[in-house]
Length: 246
Ligand code: 6PG
Image (cartoon, rainbow, N blue to C red; front, side, top):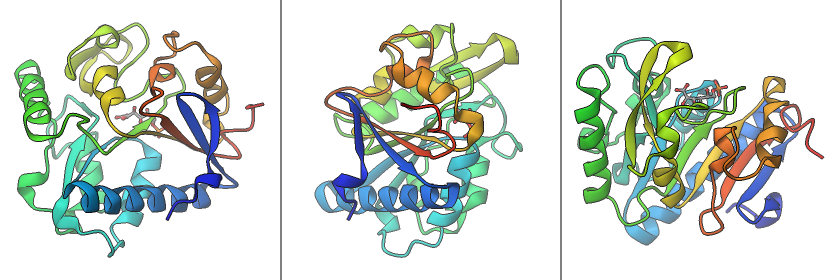
């Protein structure tokens, strides 16, 4: 059971957990994920989670692979963003999650929904949105895993890109400075979901974390738009990434 008093309220749409170091943050993240999965399965018969890329989630996936007290056959896996590469490419977020631990878990393959970005990205984004609307409940996801980049991006919602203002749930987004396409959840999808969680650990995040948290909701830092008063975003930090927070 996650004790409420471990979390600090930041404002009416964000709460924080600040661990003393990386390992303790990962341990908390795994405990939170496990507890959310157990409660969702108990209450709604299923745990629908969107995974992300990034270095912190990778460590979480490796630890989750050893968790025995989740009924894995009721877990549904989605992704919050994906690079435009085939599923066996080293940059694939799907491959990273499966290789880091999920491939060893007894999740039915029919409940694993990778974003198909290797071809026809527009058509596949429509199809992904249809799956979310038709097969999940009105709040879509029980947990959406997200990171934050040093430029303030989250999922593949990069500053000044078209997807920031979309009302669709899933969209292809061209990232000019990377000269590449990504498929990404929009804020509409993230903020209608029950629990968006942003994992931001280590000293490389210590400048962006206070910028995003202290910015107005629709600032030029995309991650500042995550979280609503109904679906509060949880930020999981460590003492290094939280160093500049007052
Ligand atoms: C991706 C991500 C991206 C990531 C951030 C933070 O596919 O790259 O989904 O949004 O979460 O860039 O990444 P780190 O945790 O590695 O800093």
